[in-house]
Figure 1 (cartoon, rainbow, N blue to C red):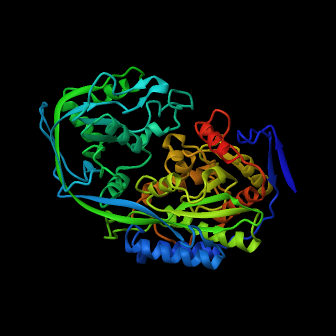
Figure 2: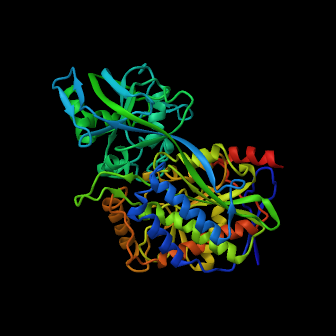
Figure 3: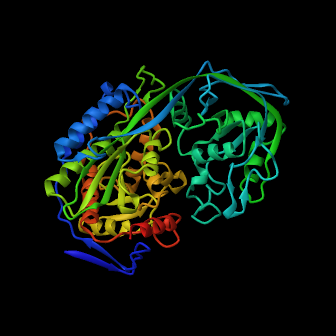
Length: 549
């Protein structure tokens, strides 16, 4: 049976007002595969799967073997790999961050009070006596009439920046920056990018657990050790000398020494027209940089389509994690990344098996395991800028990032709900499963801008990102929220994100059944679903599809 929905907007150049949504028979997705691949990827043998490490080579060997066994073909010509050029920079011999010129000299310790590093490929970093400026949320958004840098040249200065958006604590989704829903302007990646464009010498983001959506432990484990960046022609010379985070308590001390009230200025920064505030103090810090250039890899398999092999449906997941990190109390220093994202990577294998057993669909299906997500979506960004398969001929995709193994739920959570027509395919699958879609209960965390679907969305490709629902069959939303909170507080980006043989996989398997039906329906469809009218990615997609006609 084919379901045709009328009234949904199609891709600009296609000119039809309906979506062809073929009904897809459910197929079993192997729980044994999910368990086996997750367990192996999350084992100590894989050392936390850092890009460029022994763990990467083991990951490549495992995934290429399992993709081939599932029935896929190499996805990049005769190769399973797409090389992604990276540079690794690790800060060492880090001095305290000192603040002088205020009421009280201050010294902030590395790890405890602050973390810092450089994007520049230089043996040493020496920030000496840099004037400190508070730039509010560090946003320059001309389309919103907002510029936190207006009226002040920050070249050579150290900018202190608040995390998230100015309206993050709004009770609803109204405001200059989407209310409580974080936009890209709230992400740390944007804030460092803008500080560099403004010519700042250093950028320090103030960590606050609620607007950041994670505790200081996540910052410390993620920002110490080797940091990976995309290789650049100027070897990072266009970036700031140093980027880092400081604890909120340290920022409060810094402002007090400057004779300012952190709380008062933070509140003032929420209003349009805020002007940057020179603090009248100077920052100094130095460290050595251990630099290593490396080639990491995206891993790609394809099931060629039977009728329209030059049209592509995409499944994505990141295979990487943090490698070795800050040890837990018991000395364990491997961030195994079982949930994040051995589960999503295993799902690529399990879904590949299911697709191949069901036979080739009309369109080709691409299974893309990307590298360096934890370093800022680098592998998916590289694919988006250097696609193996034309983006104009990529129908859409589903991203899988961290299946929280909490049991079956009545719902699924759609991160970025209402953005694209892919949700019509999701709704059809949910109806068959007697489940419902709900919006992200924590839009202030900015999850839509924190995983690999974003790299493809920026290039116009409609991408769906679904999390397991929080309305659990056993315990309802209270139990679901508690499970999510427990993972974030105790395992996320830490050494205790480990495989548990006693996990209840039933909820994950129910979700994977949905993912299969959505992707299979897209692969059997003749439609080209688009972003909804008014969405930020719609114009890019319309222009891209126009080139394919």
